[in-house]
Length: 312
Length: 312
Image (cartoon, rainbow over all chains, first blue to last red; front, side):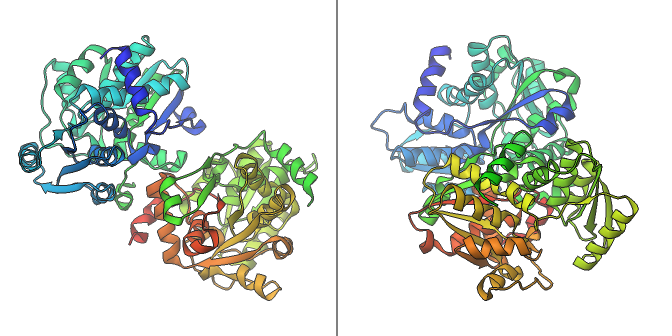
């Protein structure tokens, strides 16, 4: 995935997605002793960066394909449903039964068909095969695909264009679509930047894989950052191994603290996965001290009724 | 309060406050059948438009004054504390005991002294007199003052500058500082615009006063829109009587519905008082059909732990 591929992805996605703003906050800058630049993908179409990868993948499909399908616990589901509607295709989404209701409702709202399954990777994959056996079409994976990665990369590309001289950039890591895309854009468009992955300690398969040097899948991850429960993909892992400085983890309490700081101080709604990046900066102040730091706020699809339970 | 006074107020406040963005949302536009322009004062300093009035009033005080005081249930308290710190003055804030903790904490954070009192207007006023007897200084009222109104007016002035051809503008009304300021800016800078006040049915003293033609104070208002419990001020009432088209009320359920639409669809944090303006538009779709409508989102100081209780 070279520079030109990401530039072409950007040309493909730009007509469909928002160029989301880059936000700053003087309170958080003082608290941390750094200059933070938040790429607000919570304001993106479908409320998450996933819109970028979905539209990039869908718009490269053969014209003969009328049906697309995927399995996803959340934002990729919405993104594919939205993208398919936008391009006049039919979409079927296999979702685990324990997906947040707000995300299931949103997928329905974009007119996709939903098939619920058990919350295991095996059940997701077998159900998807059944769907595609019944109605032929194309599987669009959530992260382990070059078109998805190049689409995700456009968020960091815009951040680097809009905020000059960023020295470090942090993206949350679940399946690794956003982090691998962020790493590629950083390499191609601002090669001296250090890229960090931010991960919940309760779902630290990416950190383990990164440090050991081989893919170690996630086992029963249990974190409020529901978007980061998935295991790292193979293509994503290759990119991350090569171009990421380190993957740093945070506890559930640290994620909650960062989430409330964003909600209460920045006055924007983000989902816990987005707060993981800020939590990493809060925990590693000395690493980012006096630096210009970019953070990707990956999405804003938060179940607001959970906040009471998470507040200390 | 003529055009020049508001322009001078704008010159006074501009170096200290944010020029907050004007937001749009395609989902809400479709839902309502109108083009909505949200002036996002939830992103303002201290999280509310009140910063504008406070700094406009404080910066016109005689240089000899070193201490300012007020009584406020919330955002004016923060605004005065913040403004006093900014201009190097000491501030004492009389707050009713039942003020949201998030607002009490914020006032403390700006370094002001807090004196708690019973949650009645009488207790607030007598406690304030005691404070000023002990430490001489100047009382800065929350809304019933021309400098406060001219400061508040600058929010609508910016909205009208940044979004051309707005046909109607809606502001929530509590004490009436924001609504009277909005009405004055609309008259002076875009005279053909119709201005509406948005009020909770459970605190409808402004609607009653407006329709009867004399000030009727609020009696035991009980609404989640805590910023709108105060009774309309005299100066505010005069301006509103002359320049406002109508005052429209909404129920608590309608406020909650609008609040969740803003949080979930716009991905921004606003307090219930801000949602009252959108609730009025949702309830009166025919009045705003196909129009360009401005809404002032007055603030973002929301007690997030309450959301679970408010969600249907």
